[in-house]
Image 1: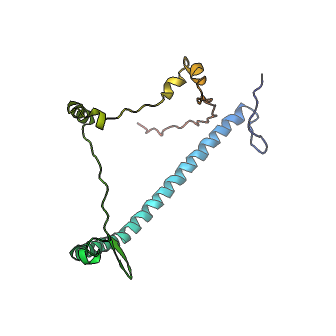
Image 2: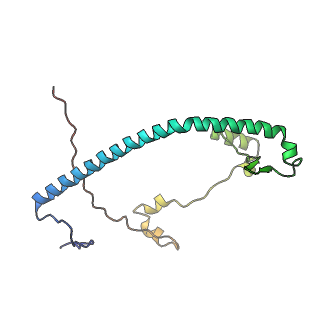
Length: 177
């Protein structure tokens, strides 16, 4: 039984026999290697450009950082006047604006299992530990469960589909003994 071709075959170079198929795979391999060479060339040029501009930008960033640090020292000394004794958190000038922002608090945990144990020991589990429920999609995809999972409202098990893959063989250059 012949398989249906899903792609329109107009203007495609379709091999006529095994020999042409082999040649097509070889050409695809050649094209893939050409792409890799061009990508490597591009990345080399990008690295050169990044280095050049990085060297040119570095002193500018250092100067801007020093100016910012000096401005902050001056602003901290004059903060009361600039913020009208804390009524505002910014000061505007004709050339720009400075402001102070409080960063939000954050929690950092080390050895999470030990922290959870300590929370439970302190009797604070209901307050500081949450349980997350989520659907086990992997279990739904198991062959024995697909039919049952598909019958649940809101669950759709889609086809895995099929991909056509061409893998030209690549050989490493062997050193002569």
